[in-house]
Image (tube, rainbow, N blue to C red; front, side):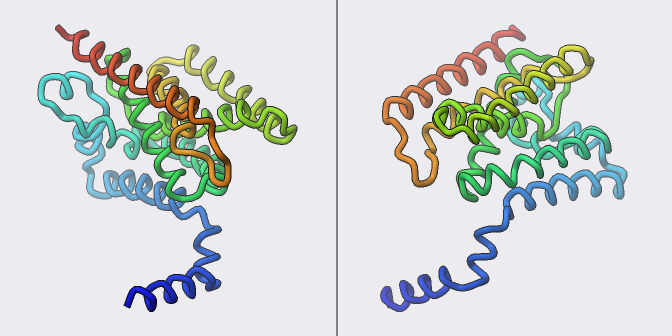
Length: 235
């Protein structure tokens, strides 16, 4: 039985369908579909405000009512058409590249953990309502900085990393000059995206063990500090 299953797996892995699916950035596409579905469902059912109220990052509801899911759900909720349009374009452009480099599961892990990291830091240092995939998207930006740091001898990777560094600086300046933007969430996602790939690994690349451990410890310290700061800020 095990032998037959193994043969079936090998046959499936060598099939054209498997190769096409493996090359397709289906998690990037799936996330975009979920974001669009939630936004359109809210419009068509006139429940947009209800979705935002029940899923956005609202600090007091986490502190007083224990609504911990608000560290996750804001990633998929958007506050308007322009908001989802800009995030959708950014996610597609960056997501297909990261998913191709890291593979499907690692990409999804980076995206979700970066988004959660951004929301945890937003919880610590922001007070208003916030939502959107930009925390996770900044995490994807951070991945390119991490690649630039690890492959600084590779000219193409270094150039790509420098381009994204410029894009990050432009976005942060824009955040500082605009009102109503959760810059803490963006910086939190960026931090997460830089450190997370160190301990989940890069395909076909042996990561330095000390870097893996150090990155995990640094992230845990930041998470604990920010959760403690967020809860203490309302005392």
